[in-house]
Length: 462
Image (cartoon, rainbow, N blue to C red):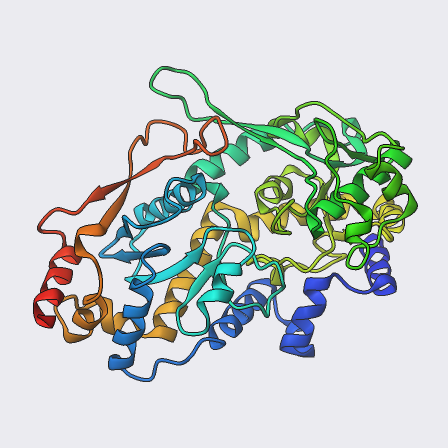
């Protein structure tokens, strides 16, 4: 009955936007498939948007185009992870986390050989620019599923086994249901405490702070709206910022994001913005309802959402167009609630009856899609689909063959780098955003199979 109330609410205001888009893209039968099958169907649809590769010769040419993206390609060949030294984002923490995730899965079981380019941002904009020939992997698509790109899990799990251990620690500390705060909580600032001891027996933590920026975009405006709800109804909402508010201007946003009067008052300081202190991720379970707001820049905020599903509380997603890889497996009113500034009150009324059922469903979402084994399962599914669509096996499974020579002819062999963990005894999440860098990049030994194949390709083109 409780979930039926949430479903009726969704029907009354219009379904969750990603769910509506999937129905348009796939047709009515899509909803009847099980959760993983829906994820597979959307993955296949996104790959069909790329130009087909009809032959081994075409596969070699296409692989050469991927390797030419030396600022953003990565490859797995003979269970070794490679990038180019030209990788323009390797100094950022996100590539380090992504590559650490991949290395942790390679350690479990080898991947088949593949190569792709990826978008280090959370919008998928790089994939739009790359076009329909080169497979481009994105952690989110700001414009929805039909935007060019192939979705992958975000990098913030860092290491699939360590991630499972962290989640187990958080879950072991969840209070009794009736002892938890029933307000809808957005974690404005939190610290992830590592459970892996360092060689000096010190622990490390990662600090994130929620904020509102002045840029006029869906994330910033959603945050202003959610803060307004807390200012008006502090007994029902617990959405706060840790410092002053740098809100986007209501007039500048009016055409695309019209403000309510209360939002105008909050953004101009007539209503003070609700503020709060730091909340550690291990303390999120003090609440039993969680709100996930879009990011300030890209419109997705999966780093935060990763932490909400496993904590035994009901999850509410702020409605918007941004999508992630496992969203096809979700259903509004069954796995989560969806709301915006207009429907928030009614959504909370429905949650009063349905929060326990949604809390159980949220835990199932974590187990199905975001536990370490589930992340591993999707990556292997993805790699298999990439190899089939772009015939990558024809190129990379025979490094001494003609197709590999064509693919590698334009590669700067001296710039190839092997990715490895440089300090596996330390936490894979480090203590400061931007400094979490668990991997390093090594020049290749003369006997490295990819370097040997690259040099051979150069000789053949002279």
